[in-house]
Length: 426
Image 1: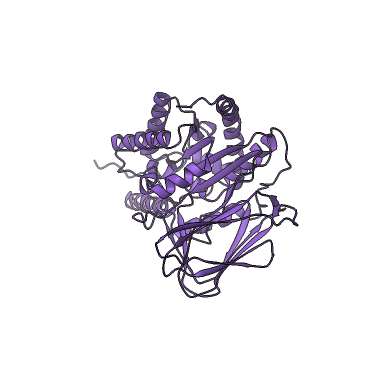
Image 2: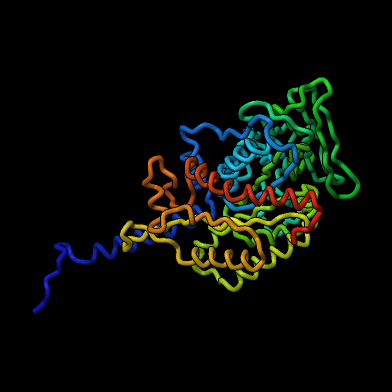
């Protein structure tokens, strides 16, 4: 006797629905993990909708000891939401160092700054380390802005109050065909610079507060004066000799292996010149969503990069951040979402390396629910995770930053003591 199907419409539609949901989840994950511009732009808009800019400015307080913490990561760092809150909270305790990296125009919808807004004219083109990995010119920002037209502008302006600063350094590519630019700081009369040189190379142009000014940064305007190439490689507000600077940059869609693509002399020199007391490496989300990730090879990448930075920065304390728990739509799960299977293995690989190398590691996932973590955070009020179940909301990044700051402050204090004693950390 044939058993009766409990579903009046049969199992066919259910199977079709499961397949469609799975395909949708894979497409969504790929679009957002690879940071497809439309996907990441929607996420940024949703996070910032109705939310004030991160209050990165604070009064000078606390210790006068200068501290520099560099943070390199994926899209969780690129939007300067998590890192912006970290910056604000640490400056409340240690005072303002105000070292910052400015975005080079608008190279990607997911790249922004919590400290400045930027307006770019239409005549700029961009490269990023994710779409032109063979280019060896990348400095810390992992972006390059180029113009070959006259009167093209980039304009940076503080989001809130003016920021005290020592110097702003702009790095340009030079060469026989390079063009000319004008730079205007805080609306002062523009100063013109000729970037042409017989040999191709780079030049760093420092801008300092005018003697008659109050020593703060309000705005910076860059204008191309010729139709010859102008290639901008980096804009760095140099850390002040007091307080803490959190100099963060992220590469949307990146895995830990992006650092292999940036293994060049110029990048290394830029990082060494920064002289970070701490270097925070925050990757893993994109690896965790890669179902084809080979864990042994991933462990080799981790080990290679840790060895590289220890040799490059022997006095710098390394810190790891393992990724938050994300989700992928799955109709067979009770909550409708499942954690990608490789994500836990990535977290485990980072934990093992951190323990074996005595590197402090903060586990982002430990502050999240243990079951259906990403989905549970989308249901919280206020919401802590975005609809993609990969990125967080503004409140989610703020709460995460609170937990990380609690973790990292003892590391900072110990690093300061060791630095003062001139003891190598490795």
